[in-house]
Length: 258
Image (cartoon, rainbow, N blue to C red; front, side, top):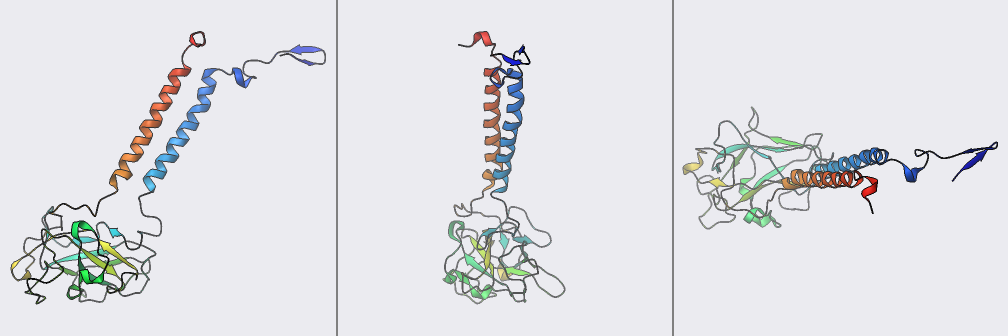
């Protein structure tokens, strides 16, 4: 189609006609768009399982919340009588200044309890633990605090419990720590530790301390690590494959097209 201006006839160039633009120009427009989509999806997938700015969700299990103090054997259960550090990161769930109660609770297959009767009230910490201004908790051994003592349950030596008592925490029965504002009311703000195991020791000496590693199969405390790492990789590979296929199709000479 020709255009007339002041009596002169002009013809649109190839660059003026979007329908006739070169494959190279079309590819230049496609590359940034595909890259933007891949980056956006990758960012969304990586950030989705992570903590939001307000911290871990209330009532969830917090990884690395039970930390061995001093020397310990990696990959081994805690030892009955072992003193550990209990930590909760910055969050908006716990009320700053509130008192925190820490108790051991049964967690069969790594599933956190739904009733306070699954927890052993005699395992509550001996020190006053308060939530800091940013909602975090850090209870460890200092000049004024003793840190949290983990027991294999039921415990006769230190807690005076009989052999048939509940809950049970040892190398074949998983437990978790309740870390919250009211151990008798699970609707109150709280968190759970990651599941752990405890080796019974004579007189609760804490001999051969470990890091609480699980010695039994657990279906309850599964990690979302595959979402954080695997899913973004799959998305990027799929998008890259589609982009390469698109380039191959557009690279075919015009005469070969039907």
